[in-house]
Length: 181
Ligand code: IMP
Image (cartoon, rainbow, N blue to C red; front, side, top):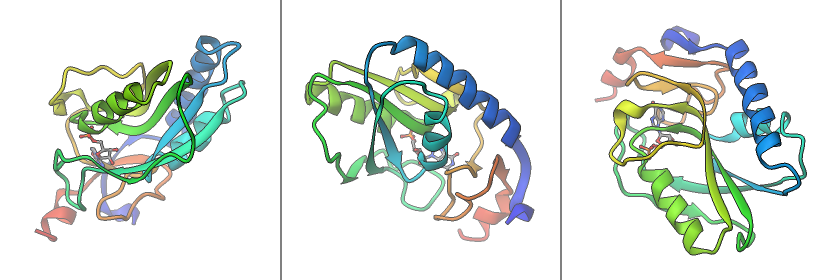
């Protein structure tokens, strides 16, 4: 698996530092509140679990599955809810946990949906921000690290459902996806 990676972009140590820093900021910003962390499956899983360990608050942890990618490397722009929340978010402070914000199609759609459902506040924390890919004027509230326009995998992010278990974030060798074209 590691041989398919051209370059490590965010190391395990950097990820740990990011989770500590963001966790401390979130703990401070949400003092005396009980936010709902909403992870967007499947990519959020490692980040949500590591980040949550550094949030010293009572939190709910919920998950939603949405898709805009269909196994390739370009966003389809069409966001579908594959698994909805199990709980109401009315009058709740929602913190959406994302692995990466690229075009922002997904996050803008879900943010609007949660506002429509009556959340008191909706903020976004993302491990990776890829602003060069944006199709919407959108800035996440909490960003782990800003990355250049490249297709990355690992630490939850996949190409064709593999590489999610890499402990770091890396740039996939272009020949890996070219051989599937
Ligand atoms: P957006 O809607 O274009 O912002 O993309 C959000 C989703 O697209 C993420 O949650 C990822 O699942 C996927 N995605 C975007 N960029 C990448 C990438 O570089 N590698 C793997 N998945 C990505």
